[in-house]
Image (cartoon, rainbow, N blue to C red):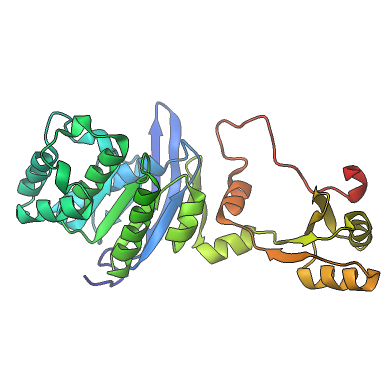
Length: 321
């Protein structure tokens, strides 16, 4: 499939939506390009699912537009051949057999029945195709939902929390599937709360909070812009090294009796201070900010509910004794 700018592009423009007078989306705009996996991230209630439902024509926006390949999905002659989505794995009728549900979807869009067996095998459901989906585990239900999304061999894929209920093998399979689809020039938009998984899957991230776009950047740009690199240093003389680094303006926190977490300076400076003080080091590691750390930093003020505990802040060595 082609990867031209319009062929497969998702475009959200000034999208707004309210429920009962409460704003779910407020002037949301972003694009999703083909040939890459875009992670759609945000706290619960941020507006991710609402945006995806509007894209698939399941909700009507109050204002703005949501188009796929240049027009709303409903205006495409065969929607399932244009875009496939996993929004709710329980949407397929539980009393129907897996194959029957997929055959009905295929028939509604003029898709050959042979495609049903292809997606059943692709998702690992071939052996249970003639079982009722109501008896499926959560993970098997997710796989069936993904099979339904793939039934039309679409250019655009939307996956809302696709790894829910999957075991580690299943999570890895979803990651590879998304990467393979993007590698074929398709457009993949995926939401997930598993930041470690998104870090291995996404090329780009769009972060939403309380219905507003907070960030739209490549994964590297996002972690660099919001990141705060730090240094892990191992030494039997944590107090002496910590005092020397703190005197030079660094933020120092003792991790354990023989390790320090140092912020505000790089590994080269820590090594130089240790050398000048004649202090032996057993570890000196420059640590880059993870996607999870950057995400939490950005969305700290956007969550509806928060726990009472907060992460420890870096403190001078005097506060650690």
